[in-house]
Length: 583
Ligand code: PEP
Ligand code: MG
Image (tube, rainbow, N blue to C red):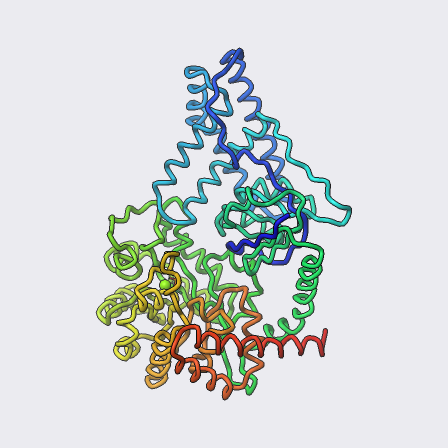
């Protein structure tokens, strides 16, 4: 079995070592359009009805188990799924196909699913498409009943645990198998906020999705390791690699003590300079991925994902509930809510964006909110009301000019009325805003640097375009010098400053940023513990020296090499500490 490594999206944390169990699912193939042979249309319709009833019974059983194990909220999805296959309109369409066009029930369901897929295809945006799965999944239960598909069962060794491999991370994939002790799940498709993902997290199964065609590449029975936090899955590993993987899992366990010790305490450098390591989240569901008390707060809540997961624009009270639920988990700590940052690659299915030749350079972030004022005001009202639940702050995305900031602040003041104000910060993602930062920083309560977009715009490189990805260079001295300029400007003005782009969560990035004067880093949950443990090992002087050397480099690879070498060296010190003190 050839060795294969795939990289995807982390969905549920953990390390899973087991054997591939490929799921033959109706989702992974197209059912051809077959006509009824000798079967009478009425008999075929009765067969469909019987399968539909059995699927409903099955979903009710899963709903009961989920209610018992996870609670009503998580189980509500099955009520929705039952409603999907009981929908009279869908039933009428299938009935017509069977009776009038004389096609088999399985094929009729496929035609219905194609219609759903067609509707969702027209909508842009990653997570939107995953909703199609929520509609498709219950119908596939009916197909399964019709075909009585026997899953490919695998003879596993007595100690081996299965890693499920499937095309799509659906709720029924997770629940159908949850009594079987699973080592992990690896799928080709499935959004981080799909219901399948929610259930995988609830059951604590290490899970990765977005793995390129994994359902066709994995070989049943081969040994697999799922490194879920890193979004990596390794297939066809030999005995030696299995041992390495098992050692890696053990090493993680061993490092856990040191990481936990670091993460339970406030962030700091080795010589005691205080640091705030905050976390980036996109949904209250993310809070299941880490221990909130380990973070100094939320440095970036990307609120648009709460909007993208829904069929229509959430009202003030619905938004308030989401914001409040996050604030309550961070008592006494800041939670920075970034206002809607859609446009570019992020679209809402209930909002028709105009066609733009260059959407990333177009109507996105704050530009859109200031135009789309009614909806912006609803979000501001929810955020202002959320203050009662904690230390809520507002962050404005894609700010380009001072006038934009002034206008947004005017609207915030209007919503606050005579009440207490709420801090308003600006994201620095546009090079012009970075270079004219003095004026912006004077009028903002805080500044947060979005290195993902700042790199994109500084290098004129689409961050999602593989053709030019080689030029997307966050460690290029040009970008590092802009970051230094931002740190110096904010320090001179006394404006609080943080970084919330991906770079802040990388070991190399953290070393550079702290060495450059940044004291607040907002990172992905998977980096939280490691980052705090890393920074505790290094005195400021060493960090300053590293920053100086990286800024003075001639190329991106030279700067990155300096930081990489230091990160590896310092991480060895962290590991050595855990050896000396295994508890
Ligand atoms: C950024 O641009 O660095 C950022 C944090 O925002 P996003 O990745 O959501 O665009
Ligand atoms: Mg951005």
